[in-house]
Length: 267
View 1 (tube, rainbow, N blue to C red):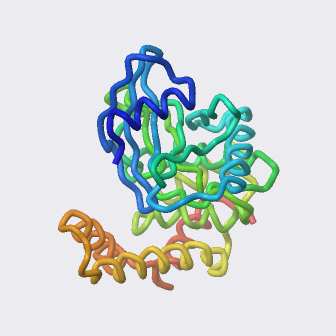
View 2 (cartoon, helix red, strand yellow; view 1 turned 180 degrees about the horizontal axis):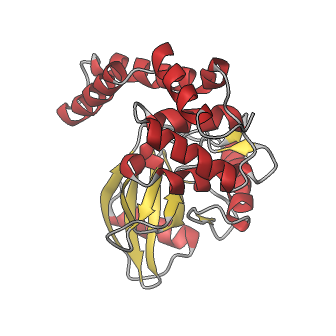
């Protein structure tokens, strides 16, 4: 938990400004939660990690984030301490800071063309590092109007070396599912925006299978943990239900492949 005293310490470590206040958590993921810290310089996003983080890993992913942002990927900026560090630790809890971005709902119902173009902007940066966690909680609309026209991709701590084709297949399932029109629109937008990946066979869904099975197993295992609070148990119950109800089956994969191969020959 981030209290007023901790917020003041973080503000000093990262030179965020004075007149500090904090609210939250405003968002929760599987590995951490986010607090809104406000100073006389404006709002900041403080991520509290549920487990200790490696300093070297954080420094590496922050460098990658800087590179993506310079190349136009829509994402918040990493904020470093006055000593140039990414992480800070208070009473055994690890924190990191980003610029605050006002976000709307998660990306499941967003225009798939926006999502495809945003993913292409990642894959056009040749490192090749991928986001590796492009699920709906991390692809969000900017809260700047009734009809979202701009996206922001958040939660980059898991970014790393990966095959863009496999990451694109994850997005096709996450944002297309059983809607062939949405899947095709995302794929066309990705290609038109210069994305290099091409999904053409079942094997390209191997990252999606691995990620979804890992997430599902974790939800089911923690759902049975007798030490959980009611709130945490409800969170994992919802996650387990989604995993079992919206499974990535061979039939779903074939439907997605049919959807994206039916409009143009990109192979």
